[in-house]
Image 1 (cartoon, helix red, strand yellow):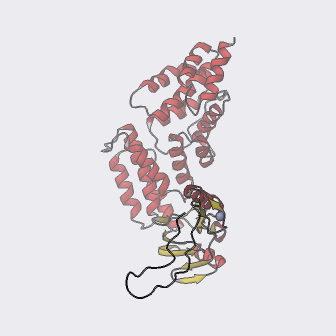
Image 2: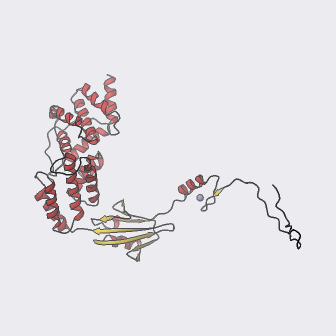
Length: 368
Ligand SMILES: [Zn+2]
């Protein structure tokens, strides 16, 4: 490499001073150091990946009831014990401008029942502030909502007007706002899915309504709230989640059967017909699927054409269509009608839920 001049020629004036030799670097490849552990990388991307894998940011976290608390827009609508609140990776905890210990923080969070509160968790690398609204209704307020529900919704024809009336009556008690919202969103979703009861919503709006209902009720542990969440999961074909939330009754029976089919087991129908176990209004397809599941085999065979007809209707959702196809496949198989069982199985060959059983039935028949 060329040497840089070690003397400056001032031209024709004055003298000159010697500049100490500027060390010249050999043409080394550019490298990237990890400033946490000093490891050297030849590419920036490799260092980024290394930092990501080996020195993760310790981001503080707030959890309640094993769910991560949202930083914005979280609403606590049920009370939790101090042990249900978990604070992770925080070196400093501030609740409403007051420094508290971790134990004190959990104790305090379990006691707040109303208002907006701010929780800031700080670690070496991070600071996270949660703005949480507490709106925890009293038992009397929750009972008032359920009373309005029993009076206006249970065993009544479901209509938009009636849901509006339920909201008005339930709100008189001033509390349980999220309970009311969860119940009414679910009911509006039922009407949207069925396109009945004077709904102004489109058929496809039902999913948003169902999911809003599940979200509004997510912290609520009451039979009605759990049943609604179970039905929303059932609609999404999340059978295990639905079964946990609805441990008894028709929803549970149906989930158990569909869960069995999903895990690749044939499912013998019930010996005897079971009665409907709940009075929560549901959409027509859900009602038909649950009714079919509660029948003994002979009656299932008899009613299969009606159920199969629903599978071909254009308004039937994709989630409901695969449930119907799986039940039809199972009924035919259990009844020994292997040909129709195989044609149902062919429709489910690529269904992520029921492909195991479908492919087994196809193979069984082909190998005979
Ligand atoms: Zn490193």
